[in-house]
Length: 331
Image: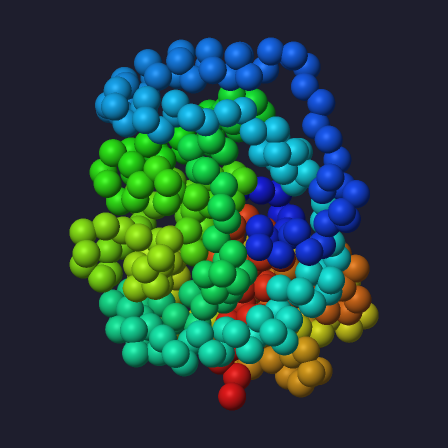
């Protein structure tokens, strides 16, 4: 759940969209002694960690074998430079294979999902959508040492405060015993496990559904599903409505804004369902999202859409989660 500019690409599908020539680009360093500088920074940051309640033993064991990882800097720099058109993004995010795997995953875990759904009042098909995008249903969790990734990015300084906070949170997770240093792996930016929680999100929302004494978002499906549902519940998801709908704008000109108005008022402005039928004449409030270069189409989204943006701040991601969950729901 990395906070990124709108319309950037979700972590599990970005690799397939990025030219190999860019992935293999080298990163130059301003210092020939960057590794020694990194070690010096780790030594100085220890004081901050101890002030935050991290023990000497936890800090030393977590940092003694990590190195400055240039790949993390390369991935971080890549973020702000790479986007795709919405239809290219959705073709991959909501591919036939991803939908098929989502349906299979939902029905094979249906009994468990229904129990979690009743507890958190969150439609678990939306959790399936998030799970599918974040880790391809648990198959692409990332194998990068979380401490090394976060320490590298904190040392780099571009988002110093954010990554220092996440590094402290990851050390706190180790100190609590929810996972081990070896098992604490994830993406390049420190997002962990099958639901790709940042360490601070783990501390706030992770759940021990299987009651084994640990909040295991790496290998325990019950904990993964419950943690994701708990997150959505806490940030305002309402199971009384869905995320939104694709709509036909025709030749009407609309300005993008965040004002919510009733569906029947959008209807009076000339907006139709994507199949060009009339919108429901309801008081349910929605706002309009219009992706760039999407022709005469856009999306009317409900307040649940903002819950998805809280998870990952990208309109593309939230639309993809919604469409994937809708596809999983189809017979």
